[in-house]
Image: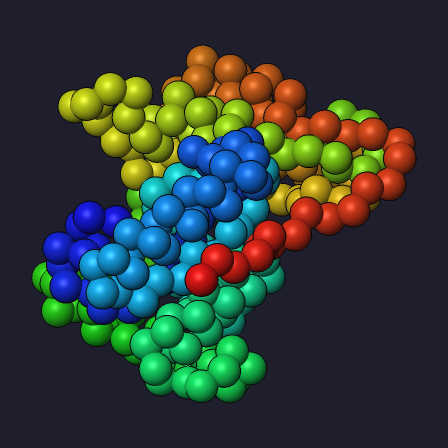
Length: 250
């Protein structure tokens, strides 16, 4: 929050994650934090909105550097995961309202949806990469991004409904694969990561693809497979999908 204020932002939308893979593990604590952040913003003369969003399961499908870049590009082309697209549209809508570019969320949603679907969002992203000295050839052709040497699709061990995809375990596993740092100075492997193929509430059948591991190390792949199978809780009883958002604090 201090960086946003120091940077001069006059209108701020905070995406406050809630759940197993978030700093705030429960909704009550997330609400308290959000109210504090909004109050700090007001005392500094800023307009602040906090969106409480779910992080009990991964957002989108990709976890990992190059994999997430590809997913972002797919979304900008209108082909990304539905939950990731919806999340982006909701947060962007609040940004337009608090930035006084739209009077109400309904109008803002229409504006951001048209901007995304028309390709303008993609064009802006490409321009940002180019203006910051990035190689737009990788943006135009994301298939050129580095691939891991080992890619394994792991099937569901049983049939049933997904009751949990533990975001904390998924995140920790991606770090162990090399997608993040355990300690300062650790190298990052941009190619490794995980593709989660289902969402909580989905019906899966034994043997159908459950997730995909991208690794450059056989031992790490084997360990990741075991941990990720444990992160997916499949039961016979039906369960409801998780919400994307739990509310807004203004």
